[in-house]
Structures are given as structure tokens and as C-alpha cells.
Length: 111
Length: 120
Image (tube, rainbow over all chains, first blue to last red):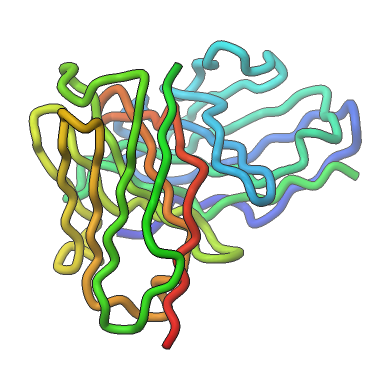
């Protein structure tokens, strides 16, 4: 099964907003509200930022938000800060033979 | 406080079998719905989900690695063990274990990861 499709890189200036897309199929992102997003700084473990498309875990800044349209989930980061520079991965439940699929990751650069 | 910690060899030779242990605290794998997964990340590459075991001892594997993977749990020791047979240099990666409250996700707690290098 192919990975979810994410842009390889996005960039933005401090204070700006950026959006990272995550495109799948009706078997995963489009068919269920179980898309999640993870932030990973170099040398660190991933950190859950968004779950079930648009829910934020306790302690995650409200500058992070999630949404979904059709087969594409999106992560929006508003008021970009230098500390947001990291890799971001989406993930989704899938009704295929395996229950989990990840995206290929997006490197966010804060200019 | 939920914590997970991976342990295992840092270096394995090609064709050998890798055995990794995830030792966790702060939750029980006998709690209804609870799951632990193994996820790996080759250097500079994306995350790849490998296997999941749930509270009811149901197991799921990556289709591409299914024939080489085995996941098991010891609820009394709060441990999940992953074995990967016939190791190859392409299996060089950081291996993470992560908890999810159900098979639907998400992975809300992760271990710090352990780097496994496959080389002769």
C-alpha cells in the first residue's frame, strides 16, 4: 500500500500561516475521521499534534489546527515561530490489510 | 505518567534476527482497546509502521514485512517484543514503539527510539 502523499517541503516567515496537505484515498483519509499529525524535531521522537482530523491533545498550541476535505487532510500552523521548524508526518487509519499508514513527511522551514 | 523505552542491540549482522523490547509504564496493555505499535525510520527517511498488538492479543503486520515480523506481549512485565528476521542493511533504522488507545490511533506516546545498524 502506498504512503499518504505530502509535499516534501514548505516554508514560511515568522508570523505567517502555512498549510501542509496529506492526500490519501477513500480507504484511509477520505473514508474515516482518523487522520493524525506528528511533529518531529531532528534526533527526537515524533510528537502527536492533531488527532481525529482536528482535535488537539492537551498542551499543544492552538496555533496548530487540522481539517479534512475529501481524501485530503490538512495541517495549518498559524503565527509561525522558529520552534515550529521540524518535519511533519500525517497518518491515518486504513481499512486495508494493515490498519495504519503514514505520509512521506514534510520539512517545514521557518525563513 | 506514560513512558515507553526501546531496548535491543545497536548492531546486527546481515541475515541475523533482530529482537527489540519495548518496556512501558503508566498504562496497561490489558486495558480494553489499548495497543502498542512498532514504527521505524531509516536515516533521513520517513516513518514506516511495522506492527501492532492490542489488548486482546490481536496482531497486525506491515504487508511488505509480514513474513519477517513477529510481535508479542508480556502483560505482566509491561513489555512488547518485536522480532525481525533475516536482517539486511536496508533495515538500518531508528525503531520506535508507540502507544495508541485503539487500533484506530493515534500514537499518543512514543519511546525515544533505538538506532539499529545492520552491517557485517
